[in-house]
Length: 114
Length: 116
Image (cartoon, each protein chain N blue to C red):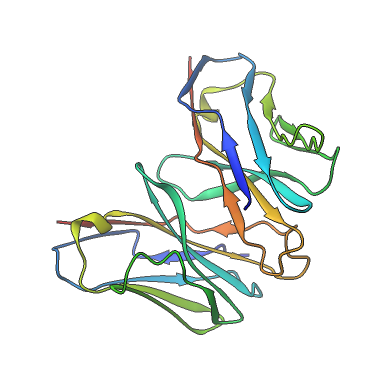
C-alpha cells in the first residue's frame, strides 16, 4: 500500500537558518505529492504541491522537488522565521484513484527561535 | 470563497453523552473527509463521502461513531455514547473530484473535543 515517511521532530533551529524536512514515499502508481502546514490551533493548510516527476512546488519561500528516482519530496526553506513554527505534513494522493484519498505522514514539528 | 466551516470549535462534555460535530464543505466540492487527530495516533481518516454517499468508513473506530451527509452542503459526525478516549481534534476536509489525485484537500479549523 501507499505510505509516507517523514523525519521525526521536533526540529529546532534559529531564525534565518536553513530548514530541510525529509519525506519519502512508497506508491504503486504515479502519485501527486503535497506539503501541508498546521499552525497551532488551526487546520491543515496546503503549502505546495507537485503532480509529476521533477516538478518543483514552491510557496512562501518553501520549495520541494518531486524526485521519482529517490521517491522523495523533501521540503526546504533557505531562511526561516519565527512565524514558520508549525507542524508540517507530507502527503500523497494516487492519481489513479478516483476519490483522491490522501496518505499523510506523521507530521514534523518545527520550532524556530529568535 | 468561504473555506470549510466546522462547528463547534470546542466541545466539552461528560462521558456517555451524545456528541454531534458539524461540517459545511466548500461549495462545489464533491468529496468530504472526516479526520481525527491525536498526539498518539496522528491524523487518521475516519470516513469520506463522494456526492453525499459514504465511500469508505473503514477508519471509523467503532459502532459508537456514525457520519451522515444529507446534502452537498452539510455533514455530521456523531459519537454516541462518548468516551474519554474519543477526546481529540476532529477535522473536516473537502476537495474537488475532477482531476482527482491532483486536487488538494481543504481543511476546516477543527473541533477540539474533550470528553470528561
